[in-house]
Image (cartoon, rainbow, N blue to C red):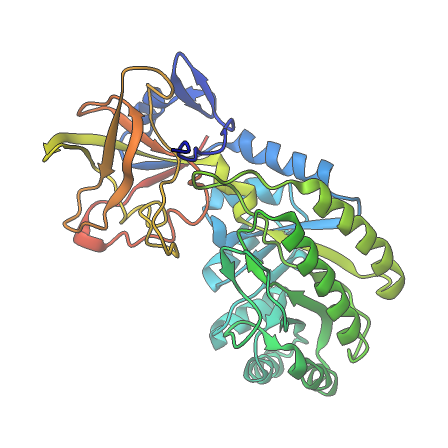
Length: 410
């Protein structure tokens, strides 16, 4: 029998005396400082290290933008605003946080279908770039611009005729609510020109959470080629080419870290080509999960320990209402375990096979299914790693009316 696949080695947090260290603080002391469980903790230095390593790996000339939807906590955004070249928002709420961060409006963009008129007006007034998602949105942007007496700055979000293969979430190819179909973009570009809007460029995002360099290379190469073709129809030179992101992180057993080497080499070639074909265009790589997911941990406390027909359950004060993704109910087809550890017994013995569940009256409230963990009793802390992205804000906090978790940047 072949051995069961294991989680990739995770070293973003130190372990001292077998206790998890987050932000230079042992997890049990951190829980006392926070004052309650459950909570999310994000390690400031881990985020900084990831950005620094990414810049070192990528070729010069790539601008890095943070996609705030991954984690819009204001303190996290403020920290990343000091490290990144721009921010990308998906709502007026995120726009407000982005503007408060001090990021220049010229370096903020707004994507997402179904932008309300008041959101479009706020974006135009702020002077940020609106990524157009439809012909109807182009019309509404023009109406709001005329009402305000401000020329809107716009880019076209393109739904390409290809997808990012092997991605966790496909955002392009086929019929999609996101972006304007590539074959319809020339008409949109003509409309932008006739209305006299400030055309900035293209946003071409084909998928997310990808760990295969060859898939990213194929999609990025196709993205540049599509941009070149569309630029011939543009009403003005391309100032901005957002090629999306898609860089994944290892969540589940058997997954390995993304090898950036081949991706970087291909981007270097593409950048050299782009400088001649789209002179003056800023090429943007937009990342969210890749920057923050591994820097975050969700911490919950064991309330009860019980046995049921030969299976041990650790019943905790947190669950899917706080961390929907870890429960397997945020896009997983087949549920797999996130990396989970006992906070003060990360690697050591004694060990046992247990399931970690939350306090909700549903069998879906499962944070770890029959995992090998350091032995834990009521009062001990359980930590779910890889929790810095799509955790707090992607979860149904109001389900069964339990208290919301706390977020801290340490």
